[in-house]
Length: 170
Image (cartoon, rainbow, N blue to C red; front, side, top):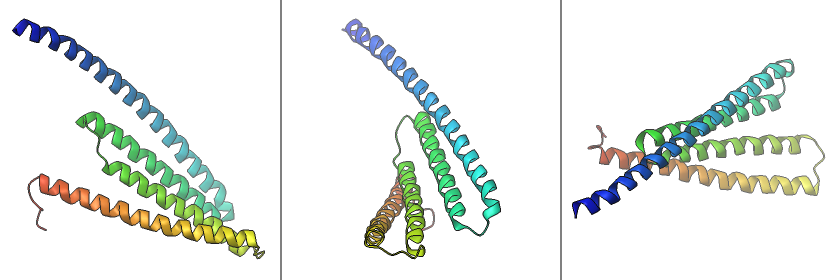
């Protein structure tokens, strides 16, 4: 009976090691692509900032640079998630919440820029009024979404502290 048991364990262990190697190889490829994308986005933000120095009174350049830097931050957080997943062998949801939080803040910046353009151009039409109302609704939904994600992160951290043996002086 022990030979039957060992005969089924060996192929499982071999398959498990093979799939683990494939998974780590794919994680490595994903990590390399994320790093390259981050460097490209960072260079783009730097170039935009450099070109925007001549138009220092324009806030549009600032919004674009911040948007691109937040994109880089999202990529770095995803890269961190991949690294932690490889190290621990399990997926942690907190980094995804952080990425969602950063993405929501990016969207708020974009909406703010678009809304300020529409309201400052001086030609207030029905279309621009409808766009403004839609933008304000989206900002409200994003605000609620941000609150939910922040609350989720806080709850996850408190749960992790309880699991790790205490509240560390709280």
